View 1 (cartoon, rainbow, N blue to C red):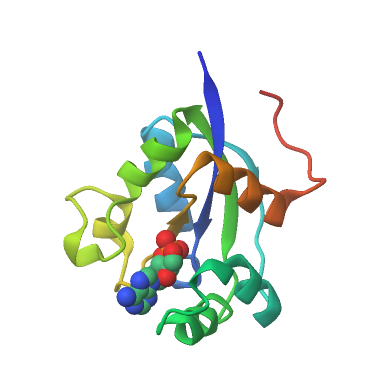
View 2 (view 1 turned 90 degrees about the horizontal axis):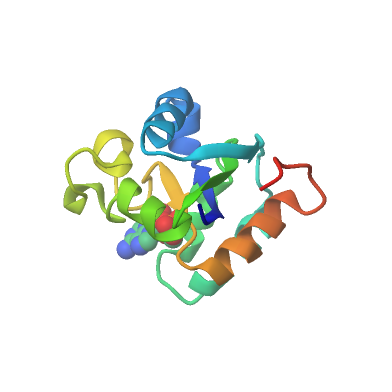
Length: 141
Ligand code: CMP
């Protein structure tokens, strides 16, 4: 078995409305294991740094506002092919375009308040895992 790790964030919309447990159960049903988790209220600087790749986008200020609006739940998830499998399980950015049964189709409110984040490449997964969990204990591989 060649398992890898990826990062997800249950965003403030979903965490604040009590959907974290449902979302984690959904991800576990899809074969992911939680290997580290936290609850964190991002500061403005942290949200801007995490989403720096989007800083020129028209939605950047609003995205930072949203991501700092309440606590979120960063989680390291593990399974085979974790990065692409998680992207499939969460669905399209816009819940209106997300496949039936995906996390965003089930739990997201809008393109911005879309319940969950997932790393988009193995390289970014490592960067994003370090962002939240550098020096934190996680299950051995
Ligand atoms: P995420 O996968 O976390 O990556 C960037 C986030 O920006 C995305 O989810 C959405 O929350 C948000 N986003 C992306 N595109 C738009 C858009 N067109 N309008 C508003 N928010 C967006």
